[in-house]
Image (cartoon, rainbow, N blue to C red; front, top):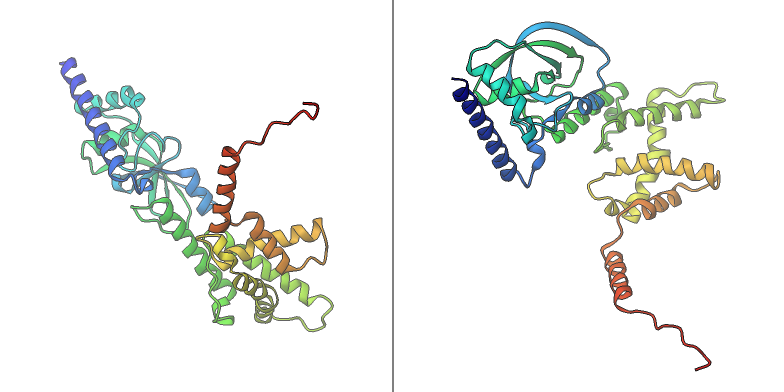
Length: 314
């Protein structure tokens, strides 16, 4: 009897591994679609401030999209990715085959989806056996961002960016004050930096004024005297071509930081347009022509060997 159960569990694991390998091959062009998400990565993006114990619940397995610590051992479908998981996986599977009740798993909930704290193998076996839902002890991490069940790292980035943008517009009224400009970022956290820039600019222009410049005026002043001049340099010099996939708004944030660095290290009067070009030269992708030239010179350096030094006495 035990040998038959052992064989069934071994066959189940082999089948799960085969499905994982096939899935990896089929998604070779888009491997991120097969990756289980890391709770730490999601928490870093969403920055939950509180957690609440929710107690025992039944949770649909389809809503479990990641893990706290074993996200590299299983794929997105919780199929095992490593042979060394066989022992633990088959022992859980044998308990399932024999209807042995195992302790409930423990989950974190955030944004409407779930991450395994404890019980990764139990989730994997349950999913392989076609189980719809599992009993779980749930703790919720607060988040105002809703996450879809098919969330990938790219989905997460887009969801966070959309939330940050909506919050930025609601808090600052930027789209009302400067309707002709659309701030677009490719990394989370930038809208908060822009808000800080505007607050800093507002403080600066209100110094020594009897009548304080209101918020709307500060936003206009920041846009016209700080943001737009830098963007105009970027457009005139076509600097975004050296940063594929990035926007003018991305480059604005980086160049401002670089500008402050240059002013502190070189010259307090360092011009912002020079800072923009300097940043591009230092960190931007080189042009195709320049890369080809450097490659040709590299190859020539390998093929053309310098003549050995000659002894003048010979």
